[in-house]
Image 1 (cartoon, rainbow, N blue to C red):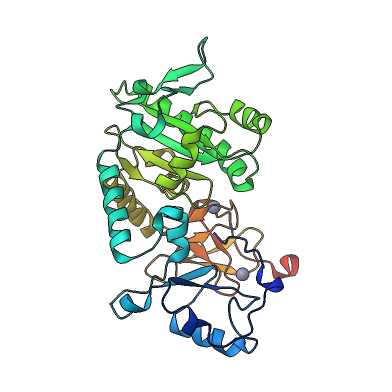
Image 2 (cartoon, rainbow, N blue to C red):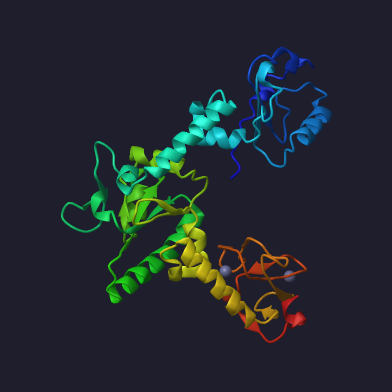
Length: 348
Ligand SMILES: [Zn+2]
Ligand SMILES: [Zn+2]
């Protein structure tokens, strides 16, 4: 996700060439920007290109953190993923030294090992989540222990979220129904973790969802987003019955496998991948798709494919796809509407 960058340098252009000399004994960051040369001299265009090459800057924002002169000669003294670290640790990350980062990673590992659904969702003031059912409209978090629980990071202002929610509702209902029919001793639940900006939006968005929710603006919402490193929504994090994270890519799995994705475990995904591989054997190599003027080729990760956004349903896909070699148009095999051949006179 690209963050918006404030262009504050416009008012404070730096005009000397020896900036790095002056700051070599303090920690110092380089922020690469497309339209301004942060902290560079007026002839910085050339310098910026040199820096881009030196630090392999491929996208922006990019934050390179240089260490003080004394430790500058050690391996790994430059931190290249500054943006990620700032996002992940905020002020805690300072001074971004190797030791500090190792400490933070260690603390994170420990936190993951101790992770339970209760310590994820509850705090000292609240031991419940919201529900549409019951008189109190509250469900104790302990009642979710032993269920597979999905944390749905979403908001009404987010267009992809609003598009994804109805699909998730239908899949949630199918999974619940299947579990009930099989009389299985297991259950599935979803908890909305909303980043809506006003309560009215939260209320109207949540009112359409058949599952649970953290209260509007609950302090745990920020902690959860940071804990799971949620960088874009919609995002669906799946927590296993043991309280440990199964995957943060629940949304992709839902898009790929619908209700069959449940319980989202590695073993299940491997099984589904094998099935997809099998099914693809019977797919035609070449199809004509309604409304597209070129023929589409069957591609996979290994042969010309890769992660894509389906031009029919606007959702992500991977594994198999039908791709137009001429214009890059790509669709899920399930989204193809096959036509016999393309009548160029009509479609052109
Ligand atoms: Zn599609
Ligand atoms: Zn095409």
